[in-house]
Image 1 (cartoon, rainbow, N blue to C red):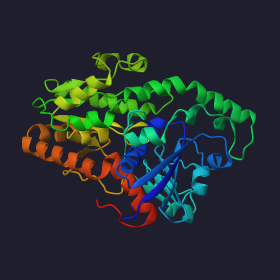
Image 2: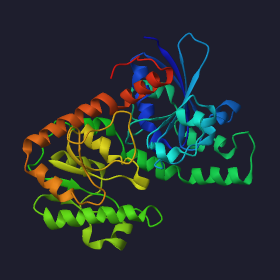
Image 3: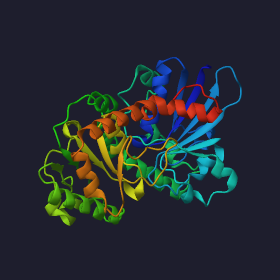
Image 4: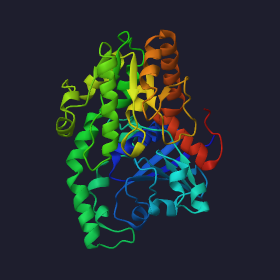
Length: 375
């Protein structure tokens, strides 16, 4: 198997891209990859490959002259493609991938878009040693003047406004990423935790009104069913946010909202419930639940992965209209062996496909159309 040279052209949106960066840093630690980064540097090369919230990767086999280029898009919307990134890449990997939503692409572009598995954000500073060696200043991706310049190297009023907007987001993004300290190690560490018998966990959040209000109403309907029909088993409610108090004050769970408390509650839960995220995107909770080896009752997924999750094997699905939600949940409560089977398979699916290093390996296999790594 060849070694690879990998160059990452970082965008400011590290909460989406940190997971795949983690995967390549692990490969670098295993000496399969020589990793370098370009973080918003003001140069024709960096600006050519800079796309909003999309990670660009230039990759070649060691010793070869020609490069292949991959784009990695983990944004929520399944009907959006970054034109700058599509214009330069060989393969465009899209986390929230739905073929019908990409009908606006021409045939040649459509063939270059491939699904990739859902992810959750990890802290980009707490990584393997190779990450420290090859990524000395991650937040240069946000702070560097390159974000005030257009892709053709010009400074305009629009580019200046965009750069200032991103600059203002730095403190919030840093705090969010700081919360994800050791996220991969934490979730994997809970995989063997014994759950509290027959406990159901579901603790969603309410989106701001201008972000998919129907999704919040759907989540509220689920919480009401759980409180009414499964009150002796249910742990949860809406997270205590300003939006939740304004819209659903009777459905709030006032317990601590920190990440460690969340992981501990999931680890103690026998059954966890997953709903789709904003714009029907994959939520971060689904891969977290699978990493922790939980029995998952999930809303039917809208977007695709390259290896589908099977109803009754890795997860149990319920319909969007909730007509089968309570019956399917009750069936799980009545069948301990099925819960154990689902939990084990969910964890196996994560280990085989979802781990950061596995996703990096999938990108290399797909980009070169060769099976360098087994799945």
